[in-house]
Structure formats: C-alpha cells, structure tokens
Length: 288
Image (cartoon, rainbow, N blue to C red; front, side):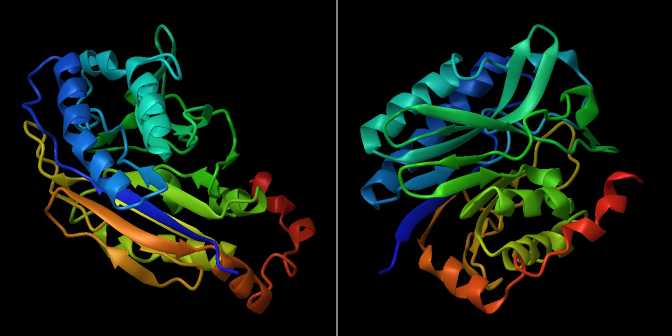
C-alpha cells in the first residue's frame, strides 16, 4: 500500500531594498509567502518548506550588526507563532527556516518544524557554518548544538539540513540513521559557486541514505552585495537519486510533488547500505 505525501517547496526573490529596517523585511517576505501557502493548501500539499532564512535577504555578504535585528525567538517569536496558526488552519506540516535568537547576542541559523495540528515539534540548528568571501556566516551564526533530529510529523518523519550542511555526508547519514524519510535542505546559493554540484550532492545523499530530499534555493540578485544570482532550481529527488520535479532558475514559484514513501523500503531492500555499514571501522573520522 502506497504512502503518498504531497509536498511543496517555495523559492522566492527578496521583496524590498536592503536599506529598509529588519521589521519591514520580515513583513514583506511573510506577506509574499502567504499566497504560496494558500495555493499549497488548495493543491493538497501536506508538507511545505521555505528557503534559508526566508524572512529577509541573504545578508551574510555583509558584516553589519543591523541584521541581528532579523533574529527572533523560536517558538515564541512572531514568525513561528504565525506559522503554527497557518499549519493548524491548513492541516499542513510547515518547515520554517529563520534566524533564531536564543538569548541576547547568541544567534543560530535554524529551521522550526511545525506539525499539521499547529504544534511546535522542535528545531534544527545549522551545524556547519562557512566563513568565505561573500558568505561571512560565522559573524552571524553560532554552530548548531542540537545534533541531527528527526521529527515525527503527521505525514512523514522529517529531517532538516541547511545549505552548507549539504557538503558534509556525515550529518546526512545521521539523519537517515535517526529515521528520516524526507530531508529538506533550505539554501541560499549563487551561480558560479555551487551550481555545478547543486544536482550532484543531494541526489548522492538520497541514494546513499535511502530517503527523499526537498532542496530549496532562492532566486534573483540582492543589492548592494551582488555576490551573484541565486539560481533557484529547487527540486525533489527520490531514493534512486532521480530528480523528478524541479523549479525554474529565476521565478518565484511553488514546486509540488507527490512522494511515495514506500519507495524507501523498495530501495533499501535493494541497496543494503545500512546493513553493510562498518561503523567500527570509521572511528578515525572523529579523531582527525
């Protein structure tokens, strides 16, 4: 018997000039996302995920303390609170990637996971934080400290991996070991840097670990930083490594696909990677 879960990804461009206050950015981006949430509900979507720090621009090309103002509490901040209401209204699981303030001066790149009844299930904090030209993330984010949780939602067991995390297969494997059926990877990445591996790494994770992935990237350019064009192409990939639904390079878009979770058993029975693992031989990995 199939277990088909209709899922959605939202890729959007930034909506207002970056010289505007953080509050304006949050309001503009949430307003831009709500019609896509409503469309997803009409289309029967059961799980939806937005792009990395979806409430504003990708501000990490700067090192401007102004952007600390984008951070908010989870789950008691305004964005998570609103998304809990919308999740309950539409009976939809929502993965909400936002800038989190744990306490004054301590900030994380986080995704809140909200169940279809509006209950806050928990959060994932981005574990791997880059610090390279145009991506000064260590200025803004403390490395995650919650491990690789998997959330038992009403429709599927969901994990989250955020942007730069995808370059590290160790966490992707732990999400599988922790029971993930679908892993969402909200991202902000530009042409000329990572595009050539955008469709390599995540299908590889899906194959190696026998789960579905939903991979989200924003679109457009963001002044004054102009580090490149966010190339969209958000997609779903199945446990065979097949990209079976993909968005455009440059359009605001809701990408919807049906994920048959029974394929996970089919593929894992064929490729016995979990059975044939040799963890006792891998200890050197944590010593180097």
